[in-house]
Image 1 (cartoon, rainbow, N blue to C red):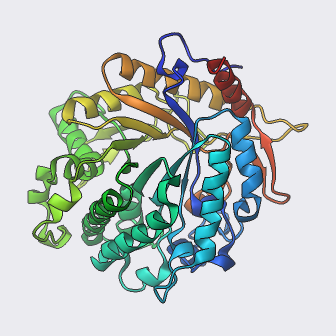
Image 2: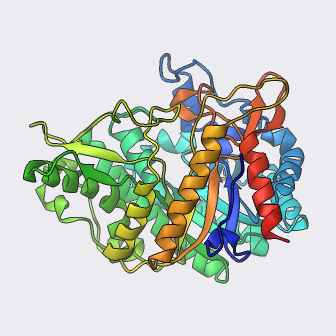
Length: 445
C-alpha cells in the first residue's frame, strides 16, 4: 500500500516541509542525567499509568540518538520536530547542565549534516519537579522561569535551529494536568485549569520576547491542539453546547494569542475559576508569531444533556476507530483548518502532529500497519483540500517517529511509524514508514 502526493498537492512540492516528530520524555530515558520532572513523580503514583510503567528508559534515545537520526535521514524527510527536556538543562539550584546542552547540540549538528531542518519545541509537558513543588503552572513565577530557560537554550543553540515552538498543547498541560488530573501533576479542580492556562500562555509570550531578542531570524511560534466540535443534532441546545465546548477547548487557547483576549466565556465563569490577569499580560501573550502549529487527531460530537458541561459523545459504533478508540475523521481536519482560517487573521499554519495509534504487531520482521497508511493518506488529502480553499499551510509532521511512552497509557499504545521492541530497543520500519519514505523519494526525483 502506497502513500501518494497527488499532482497539485502541496505534498508534491519540495518547498512544503514534511517531517516526523517526537518529544523528550516519551523517548529519551536517561533520567540519571537530569532533574526529576512531574511525569517521573506521576509515574510513581499507583494506578496513574495504565500499565504501571514509567519513562526512565523509554526508547533509550539518550544513547541511541545517532542511530535514530540516521533512521530519520533514511526516510527522506525534510525536518525533525523534537523537544528539549527543561529538567535536563536547568538544575534545581539554577545552574546550567552543560552535558544536557551538549546532548542537544550534538543532535542539532548531526541533523545539519543530513540537511534535516530542526524544529525545536521548548516545552512538551515535562516540567521540572522542583518548579511543581513551588506551585508549577499555578504559580506565576513559573512563566518567568520558563523565559530564563529559553534564554539559556537559545544562546547555546545559536543559529542551529530552523524553527522554535514555545509550548506544545497547553490544553493538555492545563486541562488534563491541573483540572481533570489524568496527566501530571494530577491536580483536580475547575478552579485550577484556567489559571494554569494563563500562566502557560504568559510563559509563551515571555518566551517569544526572548526568542525575538536572541534569535530574531529564526521562525518562532506555538503549537496548539484542536478538536473540531459538531452538534449531535440540529437542536438549538446542542448547537449552543457545541459553541461552549469550542470556546473552552479551542478558542480559550488561540484567541489570547491571536487577538489578545479570552473568549466572552470568561465573563460567565465563577470568580474562583478565573485567572488573575495583570496589566500587560494580554499584550505579552499576543505578540506576533511566525507560525501556528496545529495538532489534529479526531473530532467530537456534542450534546446538551442537561448537565453543567457540554457532553462529548462517544464515536458511533459503526465508524472506523483507532486503537485509542478515536474516530477516524479526516474531514474534521479540513473543517478545522477552514474554521481557523475564517475566524482569525493567522500566520502560516504547520500541521505539527497528525497520526494514530494502531494495533501493530511485529510478524516475521515486518509490521503491516495498513490502517496508519490509510489514515496518513486521507489526512494529507484533507490538508490538500484546505490549501486548495485558500488556507496557508507550509508543512506537515507525522506523529510519531517512534513507538514511545504514551503518557498515562504507558507503552500500551503505538503511535510510531517505527516499531520499537522495548526489551531490545530494536527499531523496525513499519509499512507506513516505508510508504512515507518512497513518497518522499519520488518527490525528490
